[in-house]
Length: 406
Image 1 (cartoon, helix red, strand yellow):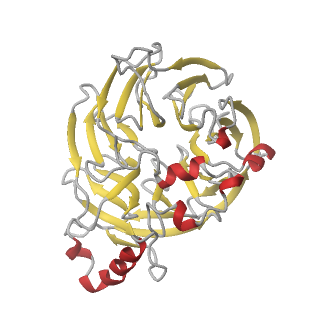
Image 2: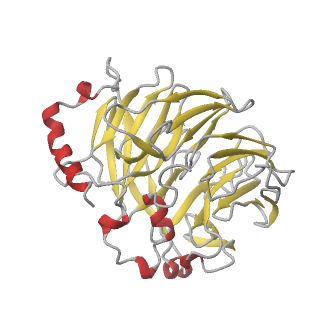
């Protein structure tokens, strides 16, 4: 099993944000992802610039743009959702309820309902570590529905923690995944569960998940097909009419929103929380690996989140090196990077339409960085000598040596 199976920093925040754990010293809670030195400020390198920084006042677990690119929702570790207008970074709404305030457990995943139905364009789906799934009316600040999947005391480590969700291409259905290895399919209109996908009891078949599921995504052009990944080092392929998975590929160790499908090429982008083969591309139809993306020579990046960025680029962020990268799909080299962050990059999102098309959101600790691509330099940033002098590295090296003691 891959390194960090039970101790990823993001996983710690999901499971241990209950009251009895809040006094844990920060350096212990996040020891696997040492912070950047206090003297360093986040900055960009290469063809990337920081357009704005959203200070959310609490650690960020997940973020998501709506289809029109007019809203950015941010989910926090205290159970609150903040909604911004990405065009000018205006704070618009704060979404919480008495239940979310009382549990104070993290928001784990967010998805806006699709724009083709006007009544749904201002609705937001949210999952929580408490095992709750909520439908929010964004402008009204109201929770329209709460589906409790937990079935137990999720704050104490018992019962299902709901960790991921995806909406079907039509918007008529959505699916959730979580800590009990099951995937629940719902009707969007009625909010009723219509099917549950799970592994069989066979010990000789791997026709479903055996550990926590941190990512699930519908195929963008197939209403009945979706994939999922998590701790068991497999990506499972599902048909919504079947109870068990129809096939699988082996390899990715997924710990966040790091499983994406490009419909134009029918390729899967997977991000793994590990030091080798962290970013890989797979063929959807065959399940064969197409290629893998190497780390920058500045250090490993244990991936929590990755996305396609248009037809020619990718975005990926994670911990250890605490970097968000924009990567050229053809050369497989970084074109720009967000560096010197205070902690790991737990979530990323890409705006796919509207006046903010191409805008990237990347979270680290209690901030969301809004990033824009600029004119790319002629040199790719694959060699640390191209973007950081040895003298500039000295403070970072000294800090890293000190952090390794904890």
